[in-house]
Length: 159
Length: 159
Image (cartoon, rainbow over all chains, first blue to last red; front, side, top):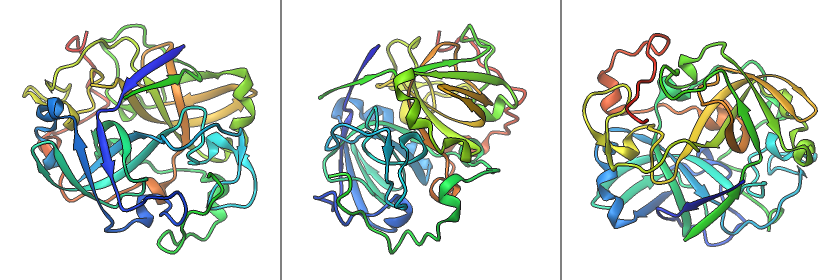
């Protein structure tokens, strides 16, 4: 079953290359980005500024192909791709929660961006702790990792 | 820019109709569902059972069209569609965090499902609190709502 989406806008960030990028928004603290939404969707942004955090769903348009077993950035062991957040996936869909600073017409000013410059945007949803925060019981392979996301950057493994 | 994805599997739930459904996984406590992943993607599930919660990204295949201003289930005021989690959106992409109970070959047994039966699946990612939990500063229109998600069900507004 083929599913066709359209880009609804573009995410602009300081990252022009896949290497040396932050791993996750938590590793991109205060990094500023900008989203230009299609002008004809501008009314859909009403009320959004009331939320400090928004979920961006986007397309890893610079990722081609995928492997079912892959080494994620935080590991040297091959893992099943669905147990990772690797950009090369059966459907190259990215998910990041960013901080929403301001909206001016169809332009959103955001912080904590961790995606490549000029990434095509698919959807924006409000991040709502009542919906989106879960207490987990198991945290898989990542549980054993000592993670300081502010010091870890991407390498060329997905290039 | 057109983006083409393929369904990677199907989510089975008890919900055959858009009305009287739970609002969000938090309103679907213990409701059991099953995901049948494409058999040729089965190796991609390795290591996933280590995580108690997984993010499902899926296609609202029974939602057609959208309005830029829409009344979400939890409100009687029209809101910008991007400030809501309404299923009718410019790209009809759904996002739910469900609890992962078991995996048997290419079949995932999950809990807290809030989507329609036979929903096409686009992606699975591990839910990782270190990545996915944020402290918000503003919670928009939803902040004023007294929400007991266990008592609220969907109505026909998006039918």
